Image 1 (cartoon, rainbow, N blue to C red):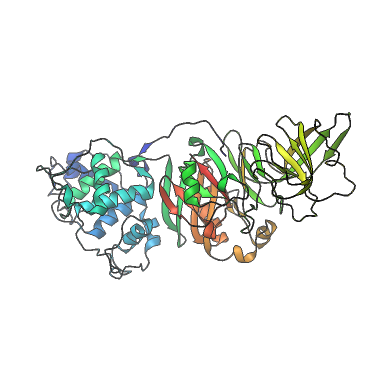
Image 2: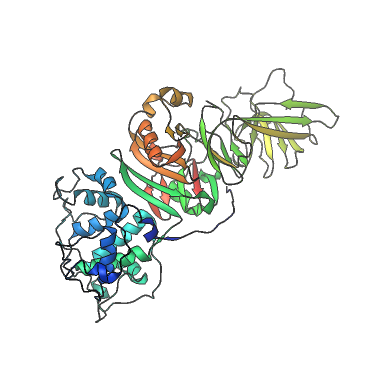
Length: 547
């Protein structure tokens, strides 16, 4: 199920534009800047890189006027360079806690940088619970951390050079081979004059400056931005993007309202670039607890707790909002003898509560190929509204085009479906009562709402009105939510926290409105080959995806 929108192309921005805030900037010529360090000649091959990183505040000297270009650089020092280019120092202050490495104390000068790199997946330990902060970083490990940094922040390495086989290619460790290749193809690393790479050799400070400066200036920002940081002591992973750069859709597990499918299977077959789990659902029936609309089509209607229950919606212009509405579906019957009848409060692709349930329900192929139960009355209606078949006291096939209007139990004093005959016409209508627009092309009923008008929203009473129990909202749990910024961008974020705290975090992410999605074991957030959380083995009922 897909919702197509105008493709605007994937805009790319150099990383340098993104680093304008939070780092030291300047416009002095290279000769003047290199003169800061008495041991960096202005015409040295690495002088421009040293100047670049010095002005950004990413790399410091080793003394008041020295840089020590041919000195070695430690793992902690290189990780600090990466961290400073990802977050401001005040944001990195959130990582000043005792981490998991037994050789990095809370008082270690690089503690916060190492904690960020470890949590973001940029750098890992060296085994035995150690990080080895003072160990000299090798040339191949620099390549690995640079590529990990790109993945963790949503950067792309261009392919500008042809593949090169270093004479010592066989000496590159297996875990580093792909990273070295990516950096080489992007023109970020080069071999020595003898065509060797010396992967296990200790990197010098000037080599580190040259490699990282080239990376920052050659990398391009993907259409999305990945954010990994801490806010109010809570670790979060998020993706922010302009939805107008993508096509958008809601998909159901196994393409059925009652389907369940793992995130890995779903996201792969959809070809999603960005995807997140969707609505809450019943574990026994896999029926979703929310109205779902895709490409303007009602996939299923769930009016319980409406209109308090919240949904993320999109109109035909691609504008996203958080809405609270009730979906009213009605039908008008035009018989061949000229008489008319009407029926209101129709369900859409819902399971009748019992054999006695007489609710009139519209079933489409989103439900399956047949009802799966015996209906007291059912009428097959084609895409033009003409009744093509009538069924009594039996299971019935659902038309490929059109729908089946059925009721499982008898309704007293009601002759709407009992009197339907082949050749009659049934025209159905819908209204989104309480919504700001009737032009809803996509909707994913979820909740609770957590941000409204740029302010934290929700408490015990509003959560309960949307059908959520106190136990599921106030305590810490793995959660995922979607917000809309003042600029109209979407922020999809996951964190282990409570709903009230999640509200404050989304406000801190500059969201004007936000709504919670299904969380816990259903949490899955995928971005362009990277799992910000997941994949989990639990079958998902619905997902929101962008491609």
